[in-house]
Image (tube, rainbow, N blue to C red; front, side):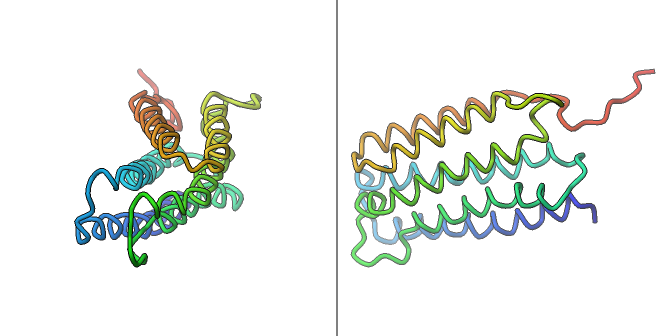
Amino acid sequence: MSEFEFVLILVSIVAGFAVSEILSGWGKLIRERAPISDTGLHLLASFWLLSMITRYVWVLWVFREIEWRFVDFILAFVPMLVLALAAYVTNPARVVNYNPTTHYLSQARPFCYLVAFFFVSWSLGSQRAFIPEGDIVAVPQIIGVTIAVAFMCLAHTKKQTLHGFGLGLLTLVLMFMSSVTITNLGETPTNPG
């Protein structure tokens, strides 16, 4: 087993826990027959988490060719742990007298802090794959830190419209970023002859 496979398995185990938290929250919404008008923020937050978990595991493939050190393992593992914590925080499955909007807003501050920390840790961890040798910073790191600052600000408001707009915009930005093809990262050059 290569070092990359070891890291990918550990990250995938934590991703599985996070996805189970999200799905149990969706199950609670279905069981409670919560009206769609009350579930918007929770569904948006949980959909965003699910898409980020999937995207993060997918993007890890870029790191398959690096020489792994312990610090690289920590920088690859911590963002998934943070996403799992965010899934746990927003999960309404353990809440009695549940109102999806009230629950989301009561957990918005820790959720937003965790999202901000995810983007900072992802920016630190992705340096080896995305920043050319000798450069200090690249576009993905600038985007990650900008999103982190925005969510630190969002953590201090209880306005549903701001949270909805912020999560919606973040989802659109990440979907756009996911559609951009990153070629030749981590690939070994081949001899065309």
